[in-house]
Length: 406
Image (cartoon, rainbow, N blue to C red; front, top):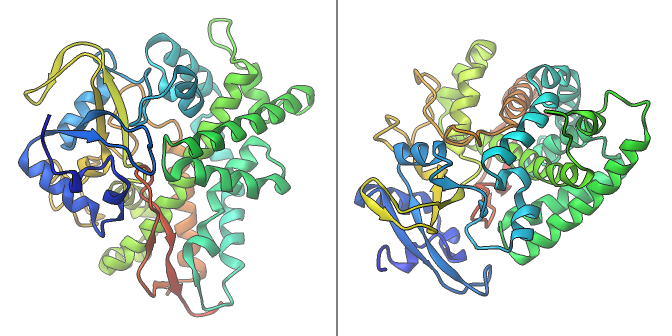
């Protein structure tokens, strides 16, 4: 199959070295809704692959996301094909569908509730203050490395009962696991995270007095008389730390950069923080699109926007493209806190795989920006950001900022 030129192929590592890969997706959206991309051998994927369909428009991403019967997650949400064991390690219940997914999600929903997130409010605020205060007197720093880098990590680790001395290594492993999602190096990092989680879960099972801890609650939670095994909890642990650390840091870091590009939106938010916070956080997540894509696999011969899709074909949903689709979002390239509705797929396009951690991410972002504006009200971006070379996370490696020393 011939389609978009290979220089505009998101399967290749060099595509993500472009200054603005989103312009390539804009070209794709203008041309047609669905594009075929080959998977040639590359530094990230030495064996190459069998190719995939890229879905780039908002309405189509939403439609495919909600139809798990036709477009399943059970063969993996990574672009590259994997063995069943690798699919399980990389995603756990993220790479499940139907009854198995619903069962695991129901158990987690018993524990990770809006009430449990609200109970973390003081912890989240304490960590936000600590991250900001450690550089407040300097006058300048790297926003990603010095302020926000370990903020969501500390909260997730607190939630999961990870000892302080173990956290730096865990944060490092999540970076490796997500920087080139699906590669051999990322797989080894996931294995190490899961092995660590199994040890932590075993300790949590022995500490019967700590019945309020998150892991203890997961160990005892059940649906229809069934519980998650220690290994299943460890795989979920890996999913939670990889999803909850890097993506929230990405949203905050890229959000800070977005506020520098749209200073009038920042002024509006700082002048009326509490009223605008829900809208501002949602718009930042849309504008950033911290997770670039997930994959589905067609369970039958079908079509998307008139394009025939064969049974077994890989279908990749480009959330970052859908969130820039101006047929769905007016002036989609702009950050605008006055939008009347939330039309974005940054937490997934709806359906059974909507992001479990959305409530926690929104809370973390709200509290962090509230504390940032209170403590460093004139903080501003002072140079160009350094972007992560990743096909999966739309992250920043560095973002220089300056401010009046506090």
